[in-house]
Image: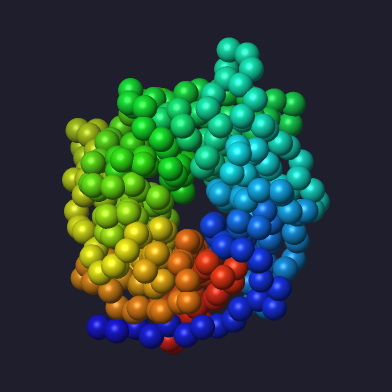
Length: 321
């Protein structure tokens, strides 16, 4: 089976350097963060910027948007975590994680993820742990809890599940750790990859996790709990076809399709049930980020890709509405 994806639009004012993160929010706007130090909120129907923030002097390496789409959390390469209120247009909170002072000092944050409800955010980096930080105005950035697997491996990527019940992070050496947020306990460990896991995606029902790795593979994990309370069957499929590092992944809202971006300069769209690619899109540069439109519709749907040339590109599956 083949599903053609057609380029819908590109912005008239692209980033000036590689886009390292994108997210299509539930309010139907798109966010992008790039090596040029800029974060942009886009009108998803016109590919025009709605809001921007003054560019940071260094690149932005991580981006996470709240369930409502009104709050965007982003992190700079040196570990400054900022919370942007898009309704007011202002960065309302900032935490300099590299300032290691007091008893709650941690390693600088690399990847950050805001809880779907916006109450806390998770961070990972050189500590090899997840730290949960307050999002409250008077205590933003203060550490509320540390979740540790007991091993010090650099944390590459962290993300809450869409239902907010779990938080996972991946490491430079290929492991993925999933924690139960309420219990604060390690719920599952996966060693599905032989190399760095740069990113992963949760399905919208929080039952599946798709990881992207430097070993050129994506691995599909079943993270549902059985009746005994133990994690599900773990790694259930390997998706092969990229010829270089796989840098990012995203699920369609119905969980039937997934997209991946790679250093091989392609985006691949996968049929999850068939475990096979149904579309391959050739780009001019590396594809560091992909994000599917979270709203279901008719047909395969739409996603955005953030590329090495600074472009956010909208792709629509044939027959989608």
